[in-house]
Image 1 (cartoon, rainbow, N blue to C red):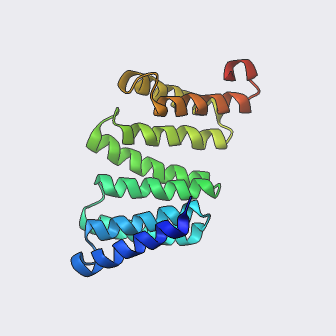
Image 2: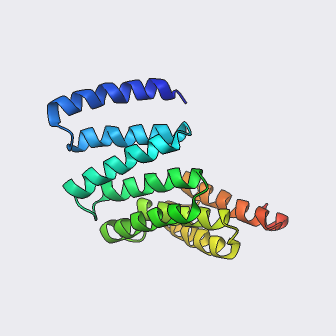
Image 3: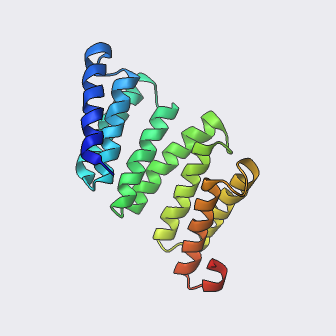
Length: 175
């Protein structure tokens, strides 16, 4: 993507939000979250984690540990850690996010199901294929029931299951 342009726009917005609302306002913190996300997508993992951890500290202080914004940041940190191959650390972050989403939204909400999908991804990356399939099949059942067979999230989960099967050499099942 156009990372430099995105960062430029986020920085403009961040500067205005900072001036108008201050450093702990949700809009200001939200642009900082986007900085961290873009940095992660650019492969600037150390910078991304620093930014996301700063966001997390503000969120825990302002909205609390069990707020959806805090959960989103835990998830974002998990994504950056997963990209670095830090599977155990990523799983810890996803578990924190999942616990919050589960408590706030329930088991079938898109955010809760999304973190369950990430569990499956991490388990697959670790070579824990049986556990990964179990998690992804649970996600698939929820998605088919809530958003339907033709939804992009459902397709993503089918793809994830296919990847795990392929990694195991189960070519027929993966097709």
